[in-house]
Image (tube, rainbow, N blue to C red; front, side, top):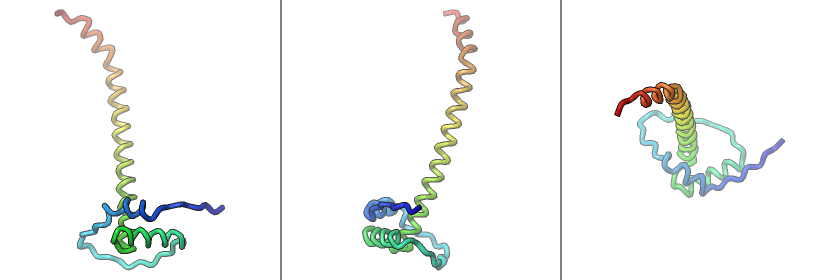
Length: 105
C-alpha cells in the first residue's frame, strides 16, 4: 500500500537550517543513495530555500532527527526520574505527617 506524504520544502528548509552549519573538519564520504523522486524534489527545493547544498540539507535533516531522538530519550529519562521521585515522596508522606504531628511548637 502506497502512502502519499505532503511535505513543504519551506518547512523543511526552516527546520534544518540550524543544523546545516557543519563546521567540522571531519572527512566527508561520498555516498550514492536512491530516494523517491518526490522526496528528492522537496530536498532540492529546501536546499535552494535555505542556501544549503542538497548534501548539507540531507546531513542537516539527519542531525536534526538524531537531536530529536536524543532529546526524546532525555525527556523520557527525566519523566521516569520524576515518577520515581514522586513515589519516594509519597512513601515518605506518612513519616513526615507523623513527625509534624509530634512536633511541639
